[in-house]
Length: 469
Ligand SMILES: Cc1cc2nc3c(=O)[nH]c(=O)nc-3n(C[C@H](O)[C@H](O)[C@H](O)COP(=O)(O)OP(=O)(O)OC[C@H]3O[C@@H](n4cnc5c(N)ncnc54)[C@H](O)[C@@H]3O)c2cc1C
Image (cartoon, rainbow, N blue to C red; front, side, top):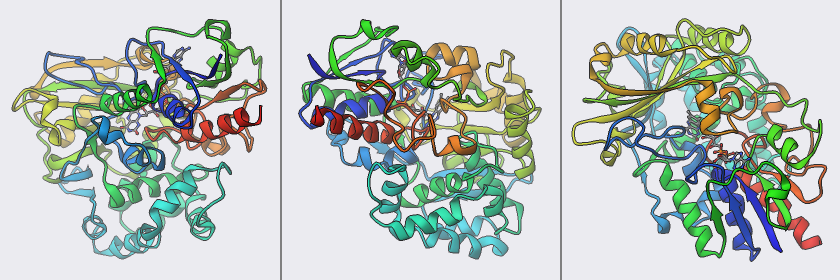
């Protein structure tokens, strides 16, 4: 009998498997798709030689993850590459705000009236960032906080809605950049604890940047899987788990799946019936004949570029998709251009680029025209650079990965109490009513993103149980 079986080889499933194998437990992973990685994969989606990340591309959370930083992933081929700027946010007048490694450069890009307020906001947390990241990402209570005072201070600033935090700024540049950061996890700007989301992304940029993985996000997953194999673990792909009986006997079963799928597979009835899914996304991967012709200078050197004319436009786009059940006319876009930092992604002189906007859960329309109209506002001539495009709306995203229910790439709405307490209101979110069954996906704290911390935290709960029995 195995000690643990993990269902799903996303970043969290692989991290949970590695953490258990490192502690001497026998582990096997079963993955539905033909390759490991879940939301951290790389494929030639358009033309030969263009290596696209169908899901995650920018990795502020991975490079800052306490779990990943404790693993020897560089030894297994993972290499972080940094663009000149982690992120840029262009405006219709041809200027741009930036999120730079330097606090000073970032503050200066917001204008003189907001530079001081930004410095005061981030500089009090930055010296304690590593401890804060670990404490914040280990909530609720999987480990005692190492620095409870800083965590409490962070809570005072971060737990109110991001709209409160944005009141510190007088001009719209800083507000708009912050609104965009909150929208990365598809949270409504006025929602509980959304200030913390914006702050985490900003602090992560100043601490270690927003890099891409050399060769593509697949390199993160391949490094985790290779390390797991060296530790004696096994990985089985093309193996969709439909019932617990599909799996070999084990002392613990750890699910890197949606709560809905877990309830169905493990026979947990209505246990997660109250779990809510959020808006979906419509994503386009592009093969380009050259770099994106941004009007502003700053986005040309940035790994990630946010597109939204002002904070009101971003708020309206989020509301349309999450509350009004319609696709936004001017979608807020998150775009990445990995080949700016990593020339291995595309033939010489060419580029890979992706953009996505938010749409209602399960939406079946085509957002291509609206996305490209937005891009043309900030990069006139963009369409002329397109060699090929691969589009994926909610139905296609859900086929690529069963965890993206209705195209919700956060695997569950990041709003209300579900932002922090997911998948149920519980101090033990990784446990289920079945004593041998656990959940480790991004439907558990600390939520979406490639950081492996849900897997790390869940593995802790599993090894404690295994040692008791
Ligand atoms: C378009 C897009 C862009 C994104 N951009 C970023 C970004 O730039 N940076 C970032 O940090 N994050 C980003 N994310 C989010 C990030 O990819 C996810 O939050 C992260 O991958 C979640 O990891 P996970 O291990 O919980 O689940 P997943 O990565 O979703 O992995 C779950 C795995 O379980 C498998 N599985 C599910 N059901 C079964 C079953 N029944 N049997 C067997 N296997 C099963 C799936 O096939 C999948 O491989 C993005 C996501 C998307 C879709």
